[in-house]
Amino acid sequence: MEQVKASPRFRRLCNQFSTILGGTEHEITKGPVCFVSRNRKINATILGRKTTSPLIRYQLFSFESLDSSGRALCLGETALFQDQVNRLLTNLRNNGIKVTAVHNHWLFEKPRLMYVHWESIDKPLDFAKKVKRSIAFLG
Image (cartoon, rainbow, N blue to C red; front, side, top):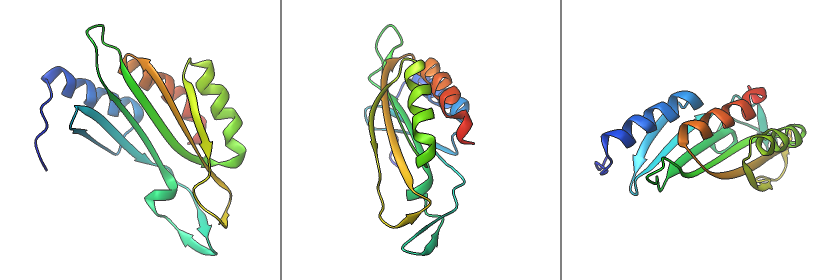
């Protein structure tokens, strides 16, 4: 893996960001961008076949473009069940986070899976705490 230039402060912040969100993996990519992923436990089928692919059960979070005040572009995305969408949207909005997309990725999946994307300009650790509260009900 290529070593990406990032300050020790950015690296510490990325580690803390990942810890708050319960990330199973995190990395710093060119930019620098702190990228965190984790997988939900979702039992589903697509086209009648059982799937445990990370493509259907991921949660992704990132921050980048950190400014001198400590605020950054913060992004997030999660897979969830159709009946969880409205609660997540409400939770994110109540935490001052902009919801940018709600859509499906697959056809003929059971149960119906949806994907929600969100964004905010915020201090990364504040964003991580808001997101953690917003998604806590997803398990």
